[in-house]
Image 1 (cartoon, rainbow, N blue to C red):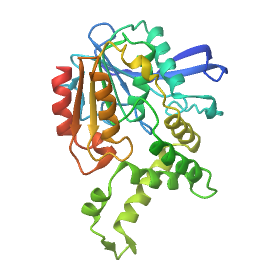
Image 2 (cartoon, helix red, strand yellow):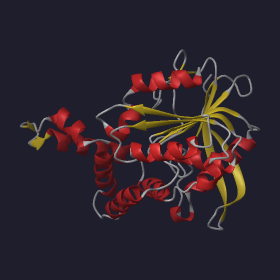
Image 3 (spheres, helix red, strand yellow):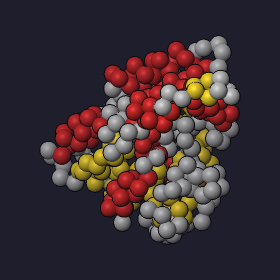
Length: 314
């Protein structure tokens, strides 16, 4: 059963910055009713939302009836990052927030729903990073943790890309489109674009096909996302900083899922974290998606991801 968008009001929630706010946390539930089946929490990525299944679900290939994350066997819940605009609410002072604040908000949301144990916590990119922060804070929350194409900290490389994003978002003309075009070049790889477009020129539109594709993605995001929300998400990417000393305390089986060609959260960074944890934590595993498509492969290489998740979830 799928539920509509629901809300939890977290009153007088204190941020790490010291600010105290009332937080509107919205979420959706898919599949079995709460407490009638094991619960899987999915954390969405940067421009994603709580709509992970169903006709317009961004992960409907994996989440649904008879899918790998089977909604006939599990209860699936997904929170919206407050301020992503999916509920129509935006945040004015986005710099007040850190990624740990979002993690704590999600933990408080679970507590409000009387959920103290998850079968699986899974998230890609920013969503996976929030997952690291959640488990560093509450190590016994989940039986399984699947961080996909993400890291527990912001690297220098990611800081640099987010700095460029800040510059582009400050543009007077088409800031969101410009930022999205740059981001697409972080989410994909030179090989992915070169193989797809072959330097071809569209004579009717009088534009290179690769340029047309990038412009399309810039315009599409501008139609469904807000500049203020994008500022927040980019800011959260800069603020990923789960306490490395606490990671060894995580009780969950940790299944790293890296993408070998990822330019955004490189596989070697995930492998470095795996190597560090596996020295003292036996239930730590490393999986790698082979793809020329880079970071976005976790949203494209469904067959490989299905094979990995099937072994873990079933």
